[in-house]
Amino acid sequence: MAVRKNKYEMPEQKPKNRINNFNEVPYGYDEQTAIDEAKRCLQCKNKPCMQGCPVEIDIPGFIKCIADGDFDKAADVIKSKNSLPAVSGRVCPYEEQCEGLCTIKKIGEPVGIGRLERFIADYERKKGVKKPIKKKSTGKKTAIIGSGPAGLTCAGDLAKMGHEVTVFEAFHAPGGVLMYGIPEFRLPKEIVNAEVDYIKKLGVEIKYDVVVGKTISTEELLDEYDSVFIATGAGLPRFLNIPGENLDGVYSANEFLTRINMMKAYKFPEYDTPVKIGEVVATFGAGNVAMDSARTALRLGAKKSYIIYRRSDVEMPARNEEIQHAKEEGIIFKLLTNPIEFKGNDKGYLTQVKCIKMKLGDPDESGRRRPIPIPDSEEIINIDTAIIAIGQSPNPLIPQTMKKLKIQKWGNIETDEDGRTNIPGVFAGGDIATGAATVILAMGAGKRSARAMDEYMKTKIWPIKK
Image 1 (cartoon, helix red, strand yellow):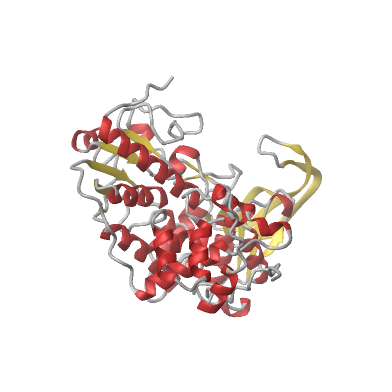
Image 2 (image 1 turned 90 degrees about the vertical axis):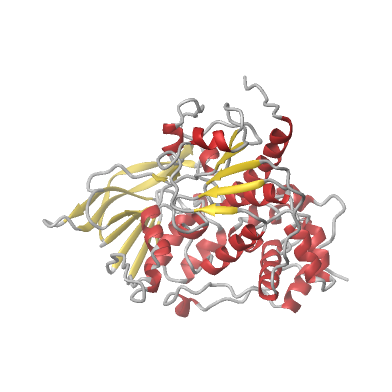
C-alpha cells in the first residue's frame, strides 16, 4: 500500500474570524484523522525521529498505539518521558526536530508527530488524566527555582523518582513563559493549568510570590534542600538602543505579552487591565515572539500591524507555521528594513519610526547574511505602538546575587551538559544556561538535570570542573 505523501490537514479557524478573538487557532485532529495520520508512519527500526526529540519520547511507539486505536496506551508511552505533552504538541518546533528527521520526508511531508502528540494529550485531558505512579520516597529534598518548562519538567521527573520537590515561583501563577510569554490563541491558559495540575499530582509543591535572590537566597535553599535547580529563564529584554526608545507607546515584547497574559488584558473589559494599542502597531524582529506580538496587536484592535525586520524572509527565525498564520491574518511584512529612530509628539507619545533600507552581505557569526544599510534610503512610518521583539537575555537576579556562581560572557550560568554548575548541588538549565531558546530545549535540559540531580543526591559525588 502506497504511503500518503502529505499530512492530513489540521482544521483551524478562518483568518477573518480568528483576528477578532483569542481562541486557539487550530482545532486539532479528530480520532479518525489521528489514526489515518499515524498509519503514515513507517515504523523505522532505527527510529531517526527520536534523535531529534530533546525529551526522548518513543515516537514510533506512541504512533503505533494511535494507529491501533489504543489512545490510552499512547498516552502512557508519552507520559513516561514527557510530563507536558499538550504544551510541546502545540509549541515545539517539531519540523526542525523529530519531523525534520522523519524518513517519509524524503518523498513528501513528514508524519505529523506534533499534531499526534497534541491529539493524545487532549484526548487524555478530556477523558481524565490518570493518577501518576510514584516511586517510594527517597527522603531527599530538592528545590526548583522557576516554574517554566525547564523547572516543571525537572520537577516532574524528580517527583517520579521519589524525591520531595518544591518549586519556587516569583509570579502568582505557574508556567513561566508558557503562561506569560505565549498568547492565548497559541497556548490556552487552561492547557498550561492542566499540565501543572499533573505535576502537582506527582506530589510537587509550588510556592508562589517567592523571588529567589530577594525573598530568599540560593544559599539558604542549599541549607534546607539536598539539591537546587535554577530555571529562571531569559526574562531580561533586549532593546534597539536607538533615539526615542523611551517614548510612551514603546514596549518590550516581554512587557507587552506579560501584561496581556498575566493580567488577562485579552479579556478586557471583563478584566480591567487594558494595554494601550493605537491604530498602527509595528513589531521589530521576526522570531516566534515577534509573530505572537504582531498577531496579538491585531486582536486588540489595531487596524494595521507590521513586522519590521532587517533581513529577508529566508532568515526569519520564526516557525513556518507562525509566519504563515501571520500572513493569513494580514500582518504587513516590511523586510530588509531597520529602525534608526523613534519620533514622538510634544506630550511624549510615539508617533513615527524612521527606518532605513538594508541589503544582505556576507554571513555573520550566526550564519545568517549580515544586513548592511543602503545610503539615502530612509523612510518614515507613522505608528502608534512599537513592540521590540529582538530577543531576551538570561534573568540576571540569581547570577548577580550568588557571587560564587560561574557566569559566562552574556550573563548565562555556566554548566556542563547535564546542568551541573561549579557549585556542588547547584544545577541550572533552560534559557538561564543557554540564553533564549525553545520550550522543548528547556524541557530537555530539565530532564537531563533531573537525572544528574538524582545521581548526586544518591552519591554526593560532584565532578570537578576544569
